[in-house]
Each structure stands twice: as C-alpha cells, then as structure tokens.
Length: 478
Image (cartoon, rainbow, N blue to C red; front, side, top):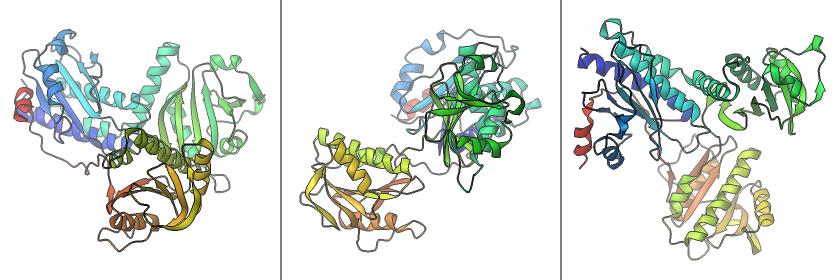
C-alpha cells in the first residue's frame, strides 16, 4: 500500500521537472495532474499553479456527471508492468494540451499543460506528457523502497528526446517499422550546423534528410561523386555547401551520413528538413513543422508574434468589429514583415477622435492601408527611423515620427529608445496603442504608459503540493 508522503513526493518532483522542461521549450509553463491509483479510488487533483482554475464546469461534466472517462479503460492487474500503458488522448480543452494513460500501477492519470499561442506543433509536448505518464507509472510501480527520484530530472532535460519521439512517431506511421535513418544524429547535426558561421554569417537554406531506400527516386539537379561525398559531420563543409541553396527552392540532400547532392525542395517521399534562416531555423517532418531551433536549442516557438495583446487592447475602444479586424490584420502584416526582414520599427495606432500630434513626415493625402500595394509601401516606410502613425480609419498619416513625452516611473534603461519612448508617448496619449518591434525579434505592446503582457506567468519555483480530491477541489470554487 502506498503512503501519501511517497505519492506526494513523486507528484511534486515530477510536476516540477515537467514545468521546468516545458518552460525552457515553450516559455513559462504550468502543469497539473488528475489521477486515481486504482478503480475504487477517488480521483485526485494536483494543480499547484492553478492551471485548471476556470475549467471547473468542463471538468465536472467530464469526471463527476459522466463515467465516460473510464469506460474505455481496460483494467490491468497491479502486477502488470509499468510500461504496459493504454494511452488516453487529449481531452481537447481550449487553451490546454492534455494526455494521459492507464496502467497496472496507476489506473488513471491525465496530465495537463498550457497550449501556448505561438507553438509550432503539439507533437513534442504530447510526447513530453506521454513520458510523464510513463515516469509516474514507473515510480508508483517501484514503490518507496526503490524510488530513485530522477523522474523530474528526466522530464527537465527532455526537449531533444521529445522532438525525437515526435519524429519517430510520424515516420513510423508513414514508413512502418523499417525506418533506417537515425534521428538523434540528425538532431545533433542540425544544431551543430546552425551554430556554424561562414565569414561571420549564420547559415541560410534547406537540408533534407531522406531514407536511403528513397534516394533512387529523388530527381537531383546535381549529384556528388560517390567517392567524394561530404560527410554530414563536417559542419563547416556543410555550412559552405548551404550557400548553393540559400534563398531558393533548392535543398541539400543527405542520407543522414553524407551529403548526396542538390535537388529541388518539392520532394514527395517522407523526409525530414531543416530550414536554416540565420539565427533561427525550423525542423519539418514531411510538410509539417515540428519545432524551431535557436542558439543551439530546440523550441516550440514559432518566432512570429501572435499579437494577442493588440487584439485585447483594441477591444478597449469603441471601434466597429470590421474595422478592428482590418486594423489587426494590417498591424500583423507590418510586424511580420519586420520580423522576417530583421529590422526594428514602431507603429502608433491612433484611436483618438482627433489626430494625435506627432512629429514626423506627414502624408497628403493619407495612404489607405487596405490596398495591398499601399500596405507594401507602408512596410517599406517602416524601415525609416521613427514610427508609422496609423489612424482608426485604417490610413497612414505619417512616417518617421518621433515619439516624445514626459518621463514615467517604469522606464527601463536596459531597453532601447523605442521601448522607453513608447512608454512615455502612451502615458501622455491614452487613446493610442504603440507596437514596438525590436531587430532581435521581440515585439512589445504599450498602452497608457504600460507594457501589456498577455498571459504572463511568474517564474515557477518549487512548491509544496497538497493533492485534493477532485470533487472537493471542484466544489471549493463555488
């Protein structure tokens, strides 16, 4: 019989490791667990960071008002091996990713974490939760006498393994069990090449990994002599070769050991492709993006601003829904253009009844940004030092605008002039929203002298867990 102290320790260390690992991979992340050790046990909830608060009605419907959650579970005897796990799929709760399992040691467990808006793919995170299911089942099976306490450390360092497991799952579904290409060397090579500069410049271009049995079907534009194939492990050589495919629809082709040649990128066979774009790159399995890589690490981040803060800020003003939507699409297009071309810029969204005074190059007449060619012109003008001044009628009134204002207490000397100017300007002009794009990709939104943070989560630290009966937890919110 398991004692409560042992169970609490298992859960605490596993949840903490899971939160730490996912926070490195996806940004600050919370996690929660609902479980029952056996069929007769009451469901227990562990939610130390209140991830599941707000979902009480759905959880009550799922777990208290219905027994569908356990109907598909085939009960296994407690002696059943911990890795004989029946996977339980995502519960599809808005804003959450969930995955669970049932095994002999743990009759039911469902793990939850946040579905970040800028996530490339659910696949790696679901593999992470699947591994949490395995680790918890393993620890409960071992009991306190054999408990090692290393599950949290496994989950903390699981990023590369999560990407690996996700790709292996996709390759297995398409190619079957006979997968010849090894994924871990591919992942190591991609990070190695991404950090290799040529004349001070990081790589651009695509590198495609092909199963050896499919190489004969590739229509090569150029194929290298078999006796002189460049080895994949020679990152400097591969980096030089990438210059032949940068900014094109061409790709280097490799069998996972050597560079075989150059082909067009529209390859139909299952493949793994690393797309390098200076400091940031993306890893694909077939046509589906799996993750990004940056500074020698894999991440779920799309590295594109989602701008939810802009949507929320626009809701504070009496603007027609169609205008609000068009404004958001215009700002998103301008921001993404700056992100892709890697330059900093500022946009002033002026929603005041009369134009807010700005010192810049006025346009007569203003430019209608609903016209695609005029929007492209605005994107080009945003490269000029100073801000674009956009009014609620979706027209560009001025560019190269200087944003001034009185000093505010929350200025940050560690940030640049755009950041602090936006704080001052919006403090003095409360009916404006300012969007600042930095050249190193971060996007900041300002309103009323404050930087808006969407869904900001404080740094997660070790916490003492007090697992509660799910029924008690649900009714305590009423």
